[in-house]
Length: 321
Image (cartoon, rainbow, N blue to C red; front, side, top):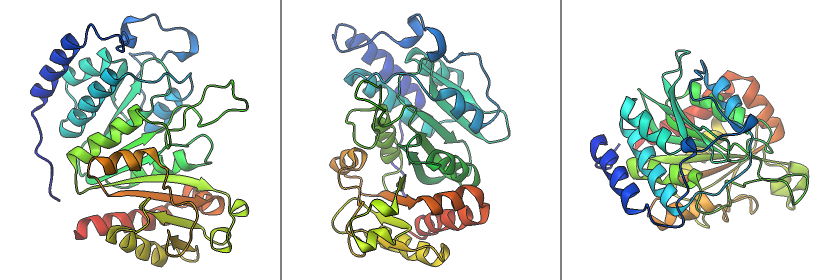
């Protein structure tokens, strides 16, 4: 794969220090979480040492959503780029903590580092593979409400060679308008988006795959009601990459019905997805939107062989280019 020219991590750190000094007087900048008093169950202990990705994810979920400022988004995007470029260093860990995030190496032989907030404010959870990496990142923006998608992304990340993955940490909607929520597939100016931009910058010909869940009985068309997986590039004309992945999934995921938007189904194309739109504005056109019906989600979470087939279609297409 053709990779984007990377900056040395030392330059990244110096840039962050300079940016912090330059922006010190801007009213939009919030004081880093690490300098605030963190209260009650929203706090994640900075000295905790989760052994597995599952344990780390469980500890990260919950809290109340707080939007990030423009300055914070610039800083975390730079840190995401540094994390994608480098193996863990104490310097990188220190700068992440200055921005209110824990940066940890998992200890359960999973060859990953994770980035999670020290105080839960709905900015997401992120995992990065250290070796043997395909230029593909996974995202689960609705892991609370789209049943099993968070678990499936975790399993795919562990069993595949994906470079990174992202999960939401607060629900996309609550029981009432007074609940705290954050829809990471439709909100703008989020840390979730900064993660996607960093991946696109590091791997401009790579792929970002975002998993969603849908209810077949709620679809408006017969094609939607009878589909098990709807694949889309979030555009009216699917790219060759989408078509190739779709053909592979149709072969590998039998007897499940795979349909490609908008040629074979006109619903759930992800055309309003904020992450996809943000990336297209920056010239990145390899965002893949995957909608899974509940029966397929149940099978994917239960059967490693099915996940292996799913993984193989993305790895095959990327390696062939």
